[in-house]
Image (cartoon, rainbow, N blue to C red):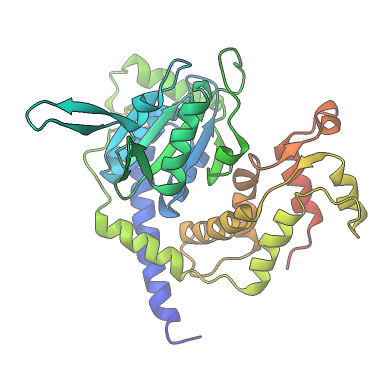
Length: 338
């Protein structure tokens, strides 16, 4: 063990305690939604953006707001609609009569956490403005480029079943989302608990407390990111990340017959950015588990959410009822684990 290993393990142990504290504070306002909460925390620690897919009424907005409250971060929510303009997100210039100058009026994007509700309802110009914010951490208003606050993350939601009045997100923008998680229906017991809470049961023991205040400081956030960098990923695990991502790309000449068969089901696969994301997400998974090293299981833990929006199933796959999640499952079963 190297001399710095004990320091890294101590740092990771502290980070794991902080993550547990934040997770507890967020979960106190939700029923279930473990995968969604972990996805939000992973994106926050890794300085990424998150796309949340689910039908209305599954507490997507509540989860994001609960995280922002627990983390003590500035929160803004924008309901995306087809008539939205870029200035409604970024801000506009207004004439300041006393100075005789045009002054920028900052829009809701100038926040730490931006909830882009039903993001696929906004037209191309709005998506383009948001893409600049997501990638460059800045926006352009008039002739000026203004930096966004740090930290900054976009948590976007979309409804998978309603397509009228929606716009398909450009692949370039989808690729900027570190992860895509699915908000599923609750179990029967969870739904019963939700109904009890909504009805305002008199039994105080059945009520879930709200967040009393922020449980994450700026120093804690810095420690989390330092701990993430301290998590060791050896070359074998790094190579596994790359092989998994490369397996998403169609290759009719692949030496493995299983990969050749898979090629006909994929229109296009993930870019090298996915390898970077998967490598980073594996480190986050190790942090969640309180370990200073990441293994193949950590890669597998986040592979579906890191890859599902970066793989386009072919027409043959759609005809056979094979979606991107199934493609990721097959890839993980084919690619040898180190």
